Length: 557
Image (tube, rainbow, N blue to C red; front, side):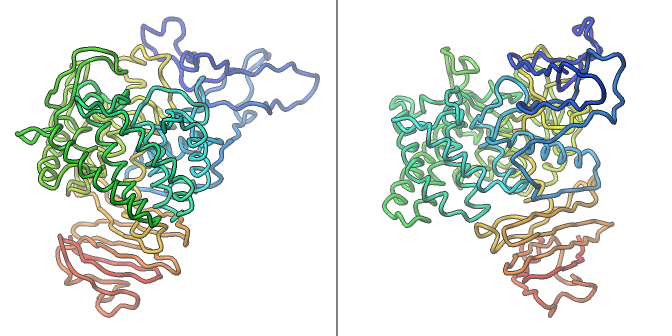
């Protein structure tokens, strides 16, 4: 029995392999099982291995087995899913299914990059990007807490978190090592696990000291900035210095908050000052006089030597990352939001010089985790929906049309025009990083957002699709206090919104509406309804405090 994720396509480059399983991307992983049959009926089930696959090739028998005689068994540390998301768009529903399966398949003892080839390793950059989604999709508190232990176990004497845990090694640099900061922070916010912060704090501080030690006094850049927006179509147009510095600033902001939470006032003040210094440096260095992002480009993809120079980097990743991580100054935010809007709406040239259509997803691992959030936070949810539902390459849904059942490592893992694009051996069809959009689906599309850590108090801020292409969305999140339901549907100019607030919690609802007049709950005027307190009206949203219960609102859009 041999295992594979995909078949060779009917292209010239496939030669005689058309329709056969493609195993080149498994590399040195000999993913096969040999079985010597006995006489009579028997069940063949490997007990000492696991495989990541979509196809099984069975040979050595007289005739093919009926499909019903072959069963796949799921092995995962994820015992149940804690979020659900369904919409009027079947392909978006398939995307949600794919990202949840990639979560399930890659959470096996450790958060792996892929479940099939000869890596299956805990690459830190991948889980850093995906952790915000993973904490919604699966009950990941103890799983990620244990992974922080693995990162501490491998932390060097200098304080560096390795790019891979628990094995060690790698070549990611600051963005990858920052998982030791970001994953702990996301886990705390989702589950209010203060003990995780307490036990991990010293290691976090040592890592921040390590980053400080890597800053080149001549350039102000970290010398441990190997990878940037990994596998982004415009990777070389931004370089690594921009996103690496942005993550350093973001890490310092997190540490300021963590120190305050743990009552370490002196540390909090130290990190705050350093945060302000590095944030000022970032804006001075990477935003030019025309209010455009600037990258440091040149050299190789893996930080190889070469002439490097500052160049305008009018890319989605530059603007989305800076906005989502909160590293642009207040003065620059509005300009960067407009630039992001434009970068989404116009055509973009990728690193191969090919012009890609408007609304293409031009981001890699880093930018993908940021772009939808950055758009919605700055009033452009319509663009976030257009990108989400875009079907041409590069996009989330392009892979769906090619038969994807999990999230691919590369946006161009397979394309109709170029097949595998020569990336046969560097190609995984089960990598969750590009599935980081899952957090936006729950937290923005249906609007279940954190307020206080652990969801004792939370926010309901549904974002109906302004383009009208998606007419309804519904879903839930199983918080530590119980299930939160949230769903919206639009018919004409009328919004119907349903929500459930679990016991011992409260929610702040931001209900889209052109006016508070005419808003109903349960078919009656909302004024005076039990469990509902009116807070105000701002930005075409009626704001209410909701106590535990089930609600149905209607409003005019």
